[in-house]
Image (spheres, rainbow, N blue to C red):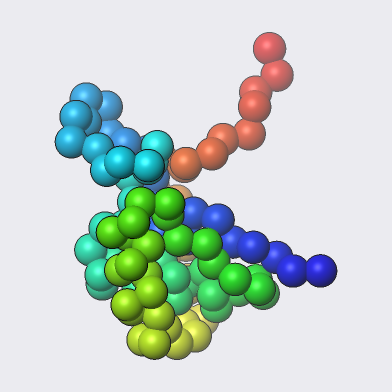
Length: 98
């Protein structure tokens, strides 16, 4: 069995009122190479088989271009990202009972 990691380059939901969205991305992606590298490193530092980049051609190409720079993150780097994420709006939420 393989585990595919989706949204490794997702920053979060588009901010309210955003009009300059990236085609084929319903979420705000990590669109700068250093951000994308950090997202991919974080994701691939977990027990997954592969990370799937966004469907946008430019972002997909960027992911391929930076792929040789991907190295496992140290536990301290992972913890720092998790602590930052606590204050961010999640891309997915668990449905609330009505």
